[in-house]
Length: 167
Image: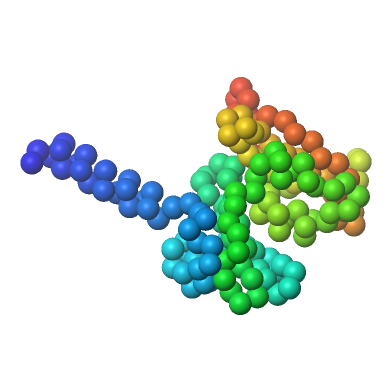
């Protein structure tokens, strides 16, 4: 085997191993216990309590932070639902004047960046996502000093505009 062939083979094996380690949580997990989820996907980035003693595990995937999968577990530690949460449909459910920072964090995972707007008394949490599975967009959710949602707006992800701000 030539050195270049060996390098290509090793690169292919490395890529396959990396992709296997980043497997996307899916519906096949429904009914599995928390140990199986942890064995397959590792520790969650965040854990949030759910009603009736359940728990939500958050798995952001990829360096762009556009995809965040959640795994909901019931009180017995069994998976009840698995879904990708950063979608226009889910962002459309945010309730202005009702939802809190805790609600938003539980639903969408960690924001990419938090930006204070002291002149208007708001703090913006920026959530990148793929709008219609294509457009690189960012949802901005603004909170008042009490942590209540006051405004939601969508736009292009600034990291992909011209030179972008790269934040």
